[in-house]
Image (cartoon, rainbow, N blue to C red):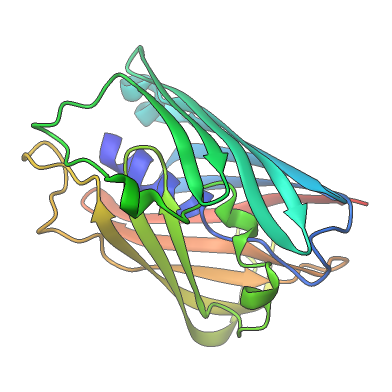
Length: 266
């Protein structure tokens, strides 16, 4: 169950919102996502992105639901802040505080010009259970929340939709997310999500680089996470490519996520 929450959160939180307007255009974007596993509602995600002329602030709250919530008591609050200069992101701080079965977990990172220079992780990882992430692999990485905006930098915005590769370090794990455009589709109206209409389907590859568990407690390096799929669309009244649907395979069954709210404030 824990691998479901943390693995899925790693993918969903890093799924970008692609902006047609420059990063420096002030606005606030608020979205909500409901996550289902094996047909059961297991997780709710609320995310808010604030953009201003010279910086950004992102906050996300994850809360387990239903039976999964009763078993795990999982909740997680994540915050990222940074500067924007000439369309380029420069993270300054990333904070991730969570609860799992009553135990607190914390990741705090502070950034220099080429990645995190201070990393605090609680509880401290046991090196016999998880491989370390050396400093050279942390260089020029971005935190999971800032990755939401990473592909809107000029060098990425010039590429086609979903032709992206995002280098991520979350304080414990180093991985790349590779996005691959698959097809254009029309999503039908459903009882879970708020969006129906044309969308672009993309495949997401989670390439684990370091920070993998070395024991048998969770998925090991010999068991790569299977590709997942995300659908991007421009809901009416916005100029944003927004992730409106997400699906992935898991040992507990198919994991599906739907956009349930989108608010954009100039």
